Amino acid sequence: MNQVCWPYFDPDFDNLPERINGPTCRVCIDNESMETCTVVKVDSVNKQGLLLEVVQILTDLNLTISKGYISSDAGWFIDVFHVKDVHGNKLRDQNIINAIQQAIGTARGNRAKAKSTYSNKIYRPEYQNEHTAVEMTGKDRPGLFSEISAALADLHCNIVEAHAWSHNDRLACVAYISDHESSGTPIDDPDRLATIEDHLSTVLRATAIPSLIGSIQTNQQEVKAGFLEGSEEGTNMTNVERRLHQLMLSVRDFEVPSVLSSFPTMKPTGSEDSDDEGRKTVVKIERCDQKRYSIVNIECKDRPRLMFDTVCTLTDMQYMIFHASISSDKGYAFQEYFIRHLDGCALDTESEKERVIKCLEAAIERRVCEGVRLELCADNRVGLLSDITRVLRENGLTVVRADVATQGEKAVNALYVRDISGNEVDMVTFAESMKKEIMGPIALQVKNETKGSPSTSPERSRLSLGDMLKSHLERLSHNFIPIK
Image (cartoon, rainbow, N blue to C red; front, side):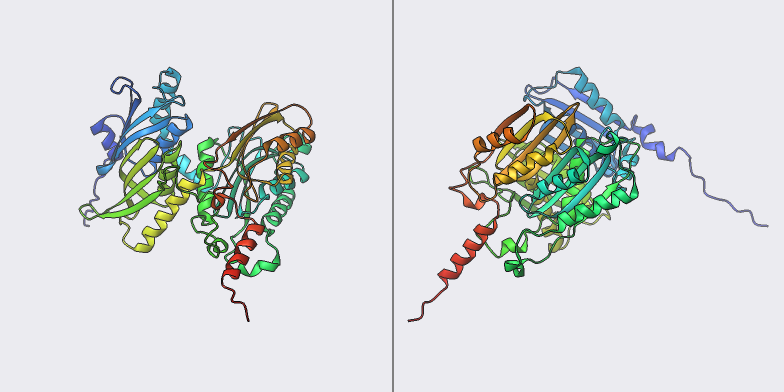
């Protein structure tokens, strides 16, 4: 009988990089090398998505990344970030420094569980065992967020937390709700969940444009409302933002709606990509033949969380970032990424390059909201958000982005609003209406983030039925030849 010999595999082979290079992750916080910022250095065995994990951690701590250098060839990840706190200073708080070291040091170990959480569509705040999560996507229209809030109030659902983005005529929303009738407990009755889902789906499917011009409506976006079961691990704010990016990508918000393409003078909300000096967002992709990389170059106006948005988009589109260089100067950001697809291929076709460019442009634009930012704080109650958004609608305002949270007995709402007709927002009238409608004390803070007056820049206003018909009639009149 022939003796069979099997090859020997060292059971410690998977730990070889750690035995050769030391610990699998080393984090160094350097406050001495640079005068104006803190240097965060990360050395680790590389894994797909690890860069996003590190950027998420820094973003969660509200740190600004002014420069970054990333290299992850040969299976080893080396990262250098120049960061500042919210006040533009070095990191002096030892608690924050300890939090960075601990979070990044454990990020790689938690990566497998985090990845499973994303794939199963589980997104929860810290109080995940107390509330039910619902996510919604659909075609946006003026007042849609107000209708969603009213629908949940009518169904006796308390909105504990909600985040909504709108861009290019699409809406994505992630909300955490509880049962008002059962003292704020999660909603787990299948029949009631089905009723709520059906009601919200009806609201999302409703059209805001009459059948008179229904012929110009094409490519209606898919509407979906899904309820998410509880999870063992809580998630943070950045995870919700990543989910919003994923939802917007799923409804293809990187494509300009066909309705708007018929009217070249009109621009969708959030599509304005130029700053006051006329510089605008530019995304280019080149080929590096030496190592078969695709080089992505991004130039745009700098803002907080910009690196998270771009890295998140590339990661969720299944691209690996091998090298990167990030910098900012005088309010303008420059980013360069050397990427390949997960299968090791570069971006060979023009269609793939065009899609990546459009998706990155959309990721940069989604978070930018020109208009008026309202911060409202009031005693929390069921239907509060519905009442606030109803007052906005009655004053001709629409919500283009929302961040709603509950802090103890208080509800804190940050809403970005714009006038539906493109006029200047009359906050005096709105404030008076709000005081009449909202019972009890309410704190209201207004911040105008519009770069220019809407009256002098009509292309920045939100698309409305009246403006669309007026533009269409003007174009017809220019082409009309009178009969003599």
